[in-house]
Length: 274
Length: 173
Image (cartoon, rainbow over all chains, first blue to last red; front, top):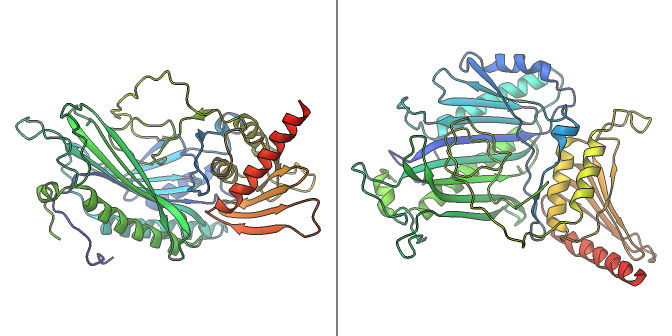
C-alpha cells in the first residue's frame, strides 16, 4: 500500500506497539471447534498459539453525558456466549494475530532483545488486509456469510524515556508541545486522558479519538512517559472495505495528533523526516 | 458492577504497559502498572437502574433457543452490551429502569411507559436502532427515528419520562 502524501514520518519513533483491530458480528454458526482451522490459515507465519480471556464488545455511542461504566456478568451466567481469545504468534513474538468470535486483531510490538525496528504502518496494514481477506474467505467457505464489521480500532502505544542515556532526568513537559505538567517542577507522576468525537463527512459522530499520557515504568523498571493514541468507531457501512477505510483514516488522524501533541525538540530527537 | 467511568478504550494491546489497566484490558503477564490512588470519596453517582438492567440483560442473554416456542434465539451478547452503552448515554443516574424485552431475532427492545409517553427502542443489532415515542392520549402515530451512533435526539424523551415517573411516585407518597 502506498504511503499517503503529507503525513509526518520518523526514523526512530518511540513506538512500542501498534494494534489494528476490527470487531464484527459473531457468525451464527460459529463454534470454538473451528479455531484449529482458523489458526491453520495463519500458522505458517504464526506457529505459536496462546489462549487468553476474551475482550468484551465495545461501542462508541453518543447522546448525553456518559454515566459510570457498567459491566455485565455474561461470563458467570452465560459462559458459552463469550468464548476464548487466541493469540497466534510469530516465531520471535514481535507480531501477533488475535482472534475471538467477534474480533480480529493484528499487533506489532517491540520485543526486548529482538532489536526489531518499527516497520511503519503501511506494511503492518498490508498484512492485516491480507489476513482479513483470508478470514473472510474462510467464513465464506463455511457458509457463514461475509464479515460484518461494527467497530474498528487503531492504537499506537509509545513509551518515551524520562532519563537520558547518562541517567539525567528529562523534564516531563519536554515532550509536549502545549501541555505543561511541570507545575512547580516537583510533580513526580501525572496522568492525562483526552477524548474527542470524530465525525463523518455529514457531521454525524461515528467514533472517538483517545489520547492518554502518563508517567510509569517500562519492563526494566526505567521511568518512562507513556503516550497512547487510539481511534475507535463504526465504519461507514458494515463491510470489510469500509472497515479498512476507517482504519486508514484513523492512521492519518493518529499521525497528525502525534505531531500536534509532541514538541519540535522531541520530534527532532525521534528523527522527523517530513 | 458499576465502575468509575474510564476514558481509555478497552484495548487489545499486548506489550508492557505503563498505565493502570481496567479488568477488561487483557495484556501479557509482564505488565507494569501504577496502582491508582486509594480513594474514600462519596461523590461517585449511584446509578439506580443499573442493577435491574444488568440482571435483566443477563437473563435474556441466557434464554434457551426456542424460548418463545417458535425458535427464538437468546439475545446476542453484542446487542446487550450495545444497549448498556446506549443507556449510559441517554439516562440520568436516577432514571427509572426500563422494561427490557427480548426479540426472537436475538435483539432486544427497551421500553418506558407512562400516562403521557411511551418510548420504545428496538435494538436489532449494534448501531441498528428503531426509536419510537408517542403520547398515548394523542391521536397521531408518534415519532419514529432510525438511529445508529447518535442518540442525542432521544435524551429529552427519556428525561421527560423519568421526570413523569418521579412526579407520579411523589404524588403517591
